[in-house]
Image (cartoon, rainbow, N blue to C red; front, top):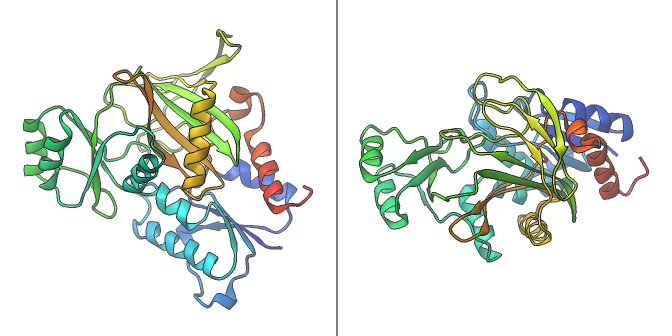
Length: 324
């Protein structure tokens, strides 16, 4: 059995790929940055593909690869391959508009958003939602292209000078600003089981809360992990100095974990992560992002108390129904 391991970032998947290659024979790495493929369905050499591709803008990557990747995932499925986190999960993960559709279909709270493609339409959308508003690319990642507009005057200036960043396909979301408890929460699941959960303090003017090294669109920041005393409930906090923020482990409430699993399933995903705020106006979680790939937190084994790469490999082995 030949298994494609689909990736796009030069370092995000190195350790995971090493673990998978040791444990599962027939793993073939496929870097989508170099992707070209024969479109004859009979030429498909893979029976299974593991999709670990994160659609995220990058200065050193052609934007066309975003769409080439989606074509390839659809083609693999059409050719009979089993894609772990296939084309539907990938499409929803790449579209803030589609994610809002999933959240609303499950009757979950999410930031009210209006999809646009013309910059001038942002004005009416913001009026409908109410200031302040967040405007972000529909296809985005790591906080790229996100802007906060406190009032009509600020947004008018941005629209006048066409300063809104609507991403690689020039579509975006005008989104409600959520007042939170000061943290962004991320819950990762593998199938029906919790993988890990973390929280990070929000930083004024920051929108990038990726927990893994290498996914910053800015210059690299120093990372130091310092063990903190146990908190009430038995968690161990580890502090990651990354600019002004720190990553801590976190135990999600059972209802939140159940909602994350519902989101993953409704998105057609086998695994993934969901991010949310605790809305201080309602006292309830407000879900705002679904990522159809597992974002391996830096120094994961030290932070989590287990090897996330090995646990992910266990999960893949169960899906493939093989002893590895």
